[in-house]
Amino acid sequence: MGVTIDYSQYEDFFNRLRIVATRSFQSDFKKMLEGAATEFLSMVQDAILAHGNVDTRLMLNSYKKGGPENVWVEGGMSYEVGSNVYYCKYVNYGHHTRGGGSWVEGSHFWEEAVRAMEHEFPKYVHAKFAEWLSNLI
Image 1: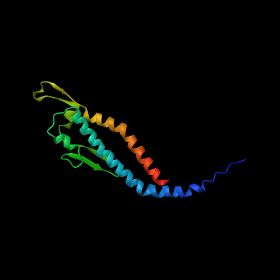
Image 2: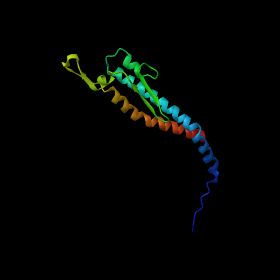
Image 3: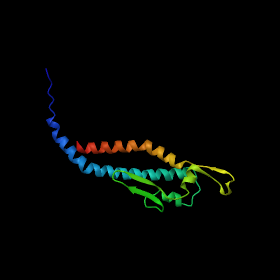
Image 4: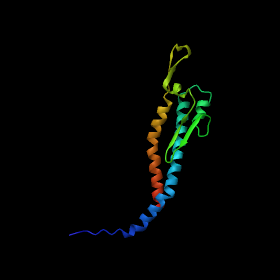
């Protein structure tokens, strides 16, 4: 007693899948990652503005690709983004005023943006996979 499963009709689909996965999908996925990194920087800017952080625009602009003091490192299929502005960490985590008189609470804009991206990133990936698969069918 046995069952024979014939999936020869899907052979063309699997071949197309293999070809697309090795060529266009990697390129498309990398573009999607770059878009997500850019979107994350926008989320950081939005969080800075929402908290009303005092800024001379150097900090805000450092969270824009190509902006002054911006960190943008591409490494294969990963991106490292951020800012080299020295006072960002004080605005984010909090700091003492000059002379050590009082404490200024941090706005935690970075953590807020990370939480937002953790929520949104799976949607980006799902949409990209759905688009990619729809192009195969």
